[in-house]
Image (tube, rainbow, N blue to C red; front, side):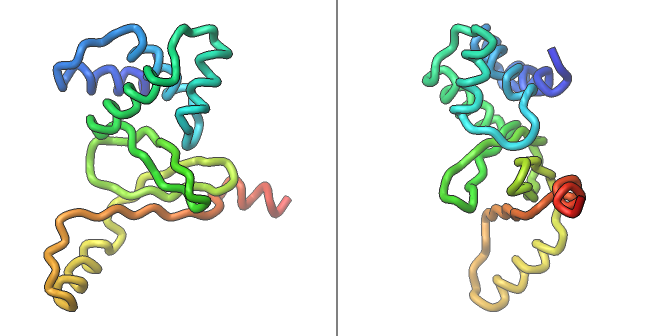
Length: 145
């Protein structure tokens, strides 16, 4: 089992969930992905590996991993959505529109913006989410080659 799959499995254990074979299989499939992925991608990977897990099982596992904050659902510019594995701390994502690579970023000035929003509107913002899209350095280099 890869370190990343181990992290997903550890999150289940810490939260008191049983580690079933289907959950372990989905964790391994997630760990095997590079960049963002969809449930359909995982289903295709499972079929290619001859794993006996279906779409409903994959969605249930994704919902659980999302609840545990070790996978995050991201809304893509085309209106679709995908998932990225991540650390269970508040962060934002920069996602490559070419290869799907996702990078977690910290505050980068968001907290100051939230304070300005509060001063301007009176709103006390209780949550926020930021997803940025563009070309990663590797894809930029390949595009210029």
